[in-house]
Amino acid sequence: MSATKNNIVFIGFMGSGKTTIGRTVSKKLGRLFLDVDTLIESRENREIMDIFREDGESYFRNLERETAQLLKSSVDNSIIAVGGGFPTAVENIQELGYIVYLDIDFDFMIEELKKSKEEFSKRPLLQEVEIARKIYESRKEIYQNSCNIKYEVKNTDFVKIADEVIGILKREGVI
Image (tube, rainbow, N blue to C red; front, top):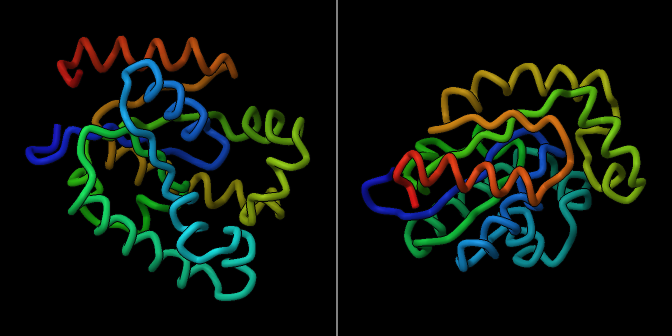
């Protein structure tokens, strides 16, 4: 656990369930839930896809770093879901809190996201699946090296996953 923050931060590739599982965990624990992508969209008054298209990925990564600084300085005892590339852009992510890596198989994730055209279409880096696969592979080690615990997502029963993650957090003495 971070010496200064009592947050639980969900990381992982896009489509791993960070937001849904994080929101479920926050409800079960009675904590505030924050989604970094939603915070950025609110601040910019536009969607992530538009930020990427209009200003590029480097601009977006800078927004993530700025948001991380804001969270580090002002948020405690919360559940935070970050975007898939957040750990690649933000140094010392552990300063935000206890890091839970939701590890999901790439092909399983693609199959699940394609069930919802809306979910699939709002993810700019998934529009070219083979490029996305390379990004996925390049980030796995970063996620692994950034986390306190890794949870393998093998289904979409997010309530069950949230309960299992809470159980792990209790055994680890985090909550």
